[in-house]
Image (cartoon, rainbow, N blue to C red; front, top):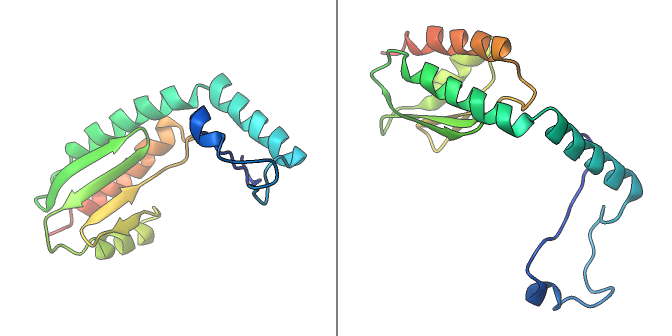
Length: 143
C-alpha cells in the first residue's frame, strides 16, 4: 500500500464461510483511500515489472557477494531482493552491521551470525552495485 496501511484476508471458500457479516473486521479494511493506494501500488508493481527486476537483481546480488573473499561467510542465500549472508557459528554479525553503517549501508543482523540485506524493490543496478562495493570493502576486512 505504499505509505497507507492496507490489509486483506484471503482463504479458501470453506474457511471464509466461517465468518458471518459483522463478525470480522480490520482497522483499514475497505477504507476507500487505502483501496485506491493499494490498487495503484499493484499497478506500479505490474507496470514496472518490479517482481521480475527483484528476481534479476537478487541473483546478481547473491552472485557478487559470493565472489567476495571472506573466510567467515558460510552461506549466501535469498529470494528476489530479500537476502542473507550467514557467517560461521559464533561469529557476531552485529559488528559487521556497525561497520557497514559507518561505511554508508544499513543492514539488519539476525540470529547472531546472519545479516539480512533487503534493499527496496525500486533499487537500480547502479545503486545495488554501489552497495555491493561497500559490502566488499567491509567483508574483506573481516578477520
